[in-house]
Amino acid sequence: MLVDSHCHLDFPDFAADRGGIIARAKAADVGLMVTISTRVRKFDQIREIIEAYDNVYGSVGTHPHNAQEELDVTADDLIRLAEHPKIVAIGEAGLDYHYDNSPRDAQIQGLRAHIAAARTTGLPLVIHAREADEDMIAILEGETEKGAFPALLHCFSSGAELARRGVALGLYVSFSGILTFKNSQAIRDIAAEIPADRLLVETDAPYLAPVPHRGQTNEPAYTAHTASVLAEVRGWSREETARRTTENFARLFRKVPRSALGLEGEAAA
Image 1 (cartoon, rainbow, N blue to C red):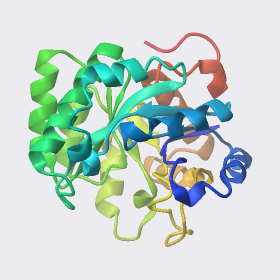
Image 2 (image 1 turned 90 degrees about the horizontal axis):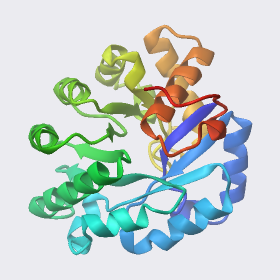
Image 3 (image 1 turned 90 degrees about the vertical axis):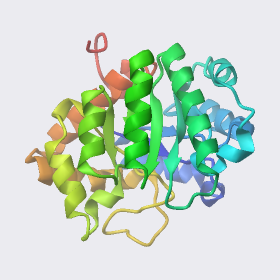
Image 4 (image 1 turned 180 degrees about the vertical axis):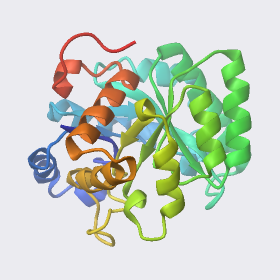
């Protein structure tokens, strides 16, 4: 089975047919999804979804676009909400210098609070990074010196240096439908070089639908298209790609029961 490690099932795009979307994902062998929080103040919507569907887990956090709105959200707030048994990650948080929807100092403050929560809980931090490679590298390396924390560079579209430095810090890297785009050869080249035990796949649905659905509303079932391109890039079969990315997900998202992923035994060290 495949895992969609990052989607937004709470977004209005999915409200009318959420059950159908989850059923289509299962039919496409996408057996588990993580619906990612973008506003802590809307956490109740995440909680409602993860409690309604056995194969959907969630995160808690504030997207950098919304950082200015939630500067009062503390690491302790995130830690408390992460006690829910199906909250398996912190974030998404990070830096987005493309849109700058929140001031950069607010984005940085939010990111540091999320790092502290990830360090305390041991849950992976889901990192959003866009056109902010130098600052992201500096923050991740500086914070790691204070104490390691698990993390994932999600929907990777940054430069090779951020990927290299992130992997050196122990981070994982997830690829979305961007990997399938005609003009994304540089991203495919990075995916070819990431260590095999650090790769994940995702949709970031409802955004960034992969080829052949580009331009449409994305949904978790389309994880299979990104996985197929990753298989081509790595020279793996589709089965091996599913096995490797699911094992990697299990290693990073340790709170998800391995039985929920069709895996046996204890999590890998």
